[in-house]
Image (cartoon, rainbow, N blue to C red; front, side):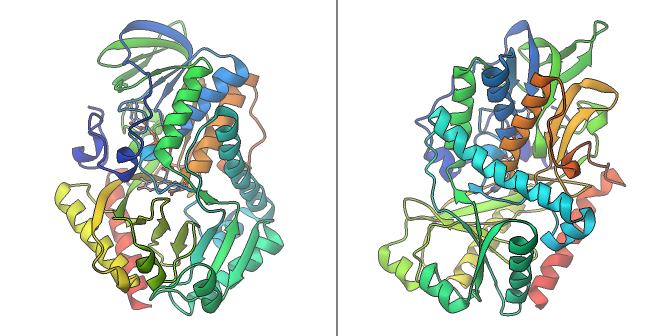
Amino acid sequence: MNKRLYDDNLYRFDTPQRSYWEATAADIGVNAPPLAGDDDCDVAIIGGGYTGLSAALHLARDHSIDVRVLEAGHFGWGASGRNGGFCSMGGTGLQRKDLVKMVGLDNAREFFRSQVEGVELVREIAASEGIEFQAFGSAELEVAHLAKAFDGLTEDHHLLTSKLGISAELFSAGECRERFFDSSEQFGALMTRPTFGLHPLRYCRGLANAAIRRGAVLHEHSEVLSWQKADDGSHRISTAGGTLRARRIVYSTNGFMPETLRPEFYARTLPVISAIIVTRPLSESEKAAHSWVTEHPSINSRRVLNYFRLLPDGRFMFGGRGHSTGHPDGEAETYRRLESMLKKIWPEWSKVDIDYRWHGLICMTGSMVPSIGQLDDDGSVYFGYGYHGNGVNTATWTGKQLADWIGSGGMPAMPEIVHGMARKFPLAPLRLKYLRAGIAFSSWRDRRS
Ligand SMILES: Cc1cc2nc3c(=O)[nH]c(=O)nc-3n(C[C@H](O)[C@H](O)[C@H](O)COP(=O)(O)OP(=O)(O)OC[C@H]3O[C@@H](n4cnc5c(N)ncnc54)[C@H](O)[C@@H]3O)c2cc1C
């Protein structure tokens, strides 16, 4: 097994998560036999989530390039099959105002434009490729969990609408209760568009099947164990079952990136565990007890935030920070904590059973923004990663940028701030220790406020 940051338990590629998504997407198969023997192709993609599959679809469909995808698990094994299904704007690890401070207003506006493009691209792909991913809701709510948090939302509303070109609306606590929902932590909300909810695994498998239909060849259960450059300039990537020779590589393993497969990528990422629980379907009276009438996906204003949404079958999904090691004992504790938060925020649901629990890795970078590019010392290697828990649109968009780059031979116009390799994390072996310290400090500030 390739060396990785967390407990081995997080990298069992042969074991699907026991998620709601896995339980409700079983009808969509993907014909992707493991790599067997020796073969070659023009572009080999390592990692079959949204980044790799979007790249494969666009390379095959729009540029007629001979492309293969190697995925260590089944398609949708990674974050792309187990996320919250928010097709929303984000992509960085920064507050909006801090992003503007860091990169300037013009760069931030350009980045936000690309985020909107990403959301629209997901819808376009679904329409053009016939992917049915159960779209639900048409905006995102950011809910003030404290009265004073509403001031921050008001500032953001101004920044979004007057400076960043994003459609947003503010709602008082009373308006929010009437139009969306109520809870013990509801003090008004900021609504942004375009955002919607979807079934992430249906989307991922739909992308995989679209890529196959358009001519890409996909291999599941094909973990790349070694990657070498041959004297003729081609890449040799090997799995347990075979070797693929390729002229170019797209490296798209994001939060599950092996630490040592290729030295240039060492310590470029900081994966963070995020976890989700899903209740049994709520009855109409249970929904009414918290005035729940919205389909919009929502987040709260905590520093260590929670994300939640009603699902089309009436179940309620609630997600947040996962454990810091990935060890099974810690996971159980995470799920207990999430359940107790959910039931504190919506006390009328305190007797509702939890039917599903799962977790996965989101990916942060040292630059706090996504990283998209080509290796400086080897122009035949392309990469895209680091979406800070907002990859449904960003990873899909990134895959298209990489495909257009390879297909046209020139870098497409993209926001300056996402271009190039993210800086290396200092004191790399201590990454998880400082992540733990950072989360503990933010959680303490949440508790104090
Ligand atoms: C619990 C959770 C909730 C989230 N919620 C949201 C949300 O609501 N909205 C949103 O926009 N984003 C969300 N995200 C983030 C989003 O899912 C990711 O940003 C996105 O899926 C990244 O796509 P990707 O293709 O880059 O990576 P992944 O989907 O993780 O795919 C990478 C793949 O690489 C494979 N791989 C790794 N090593 C190798 C190897 N050596 N050989 C071959 N394959 C390999 C892995 O098996 C994996 O399938 C969430 C993530 C998690 C974990």
